[in-house]
Image (tube, rainbow, N blue to C red; front, side):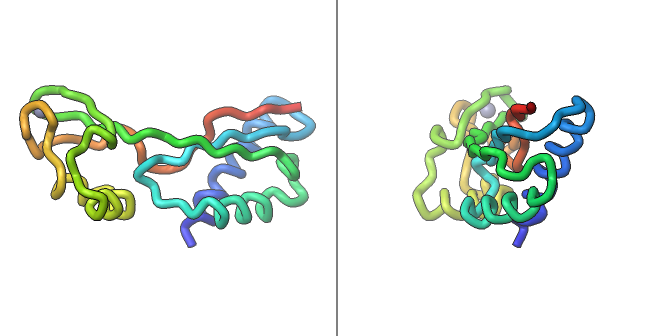
Length: 132
Ligand SMILES: [Zn+2]
């Protein structure tokens, strides 16, 4: 399960920050989950709980936030989000699962160009950490 690998990244980063700041423990971790990153939240939560056991992050309060996807047209520079896409529910599901297929189903809303980049929305990252 890739949730475990993602959770490990979050825990290691959080512990490194706590170490650098000489914190006694980590009270809260806010984690942003990319809209295009398929994450099973319950699995992710369990992984975090297991991985923080016996560390400074044990029993810390973990909150999940959504990292909105953002696309940018390489031709006209238009920036748009997932909700501006004119794609069906089925395609939307696919895009969430395999972000790269977004190019097959979508075009720039302004100039119809299929040449655009995924600027944001992939991966999992730490939004903020509260230390003691
Ligand atoms: Zn465009």
